[in-house]
Length: 124
Image (cartoon, rainbow, N blue to C red; front, side):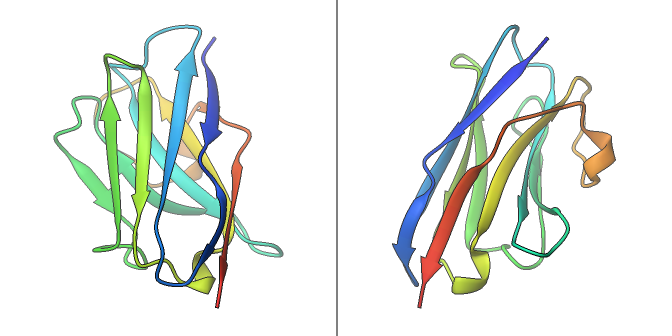
């Protein structure tokens, strides 16, 4: 069983940056595709970014492309999301997720294990 724990959320002004991390425990996720999703109040959870097990392939939602960067350190069993040029509309709870297969995925149902989420609030 894999446990995921996100960290790094907080309050930031528009235009600022945050770096989220997602630490995995229980077993290695080095062979797992990993992803980030977010959920704002009153909305459904939406895809943000995905990364292949090797880290060589990434995919982003159009709303964050060019501002967010997903990466991973398999030696540390950790996933990251660097968020730059943050906007108030980026305010949400951010979740990391994993799927024990290669490739990268955008669907919430594609993922098998999830973290508890970390709050990101961007003020205008």
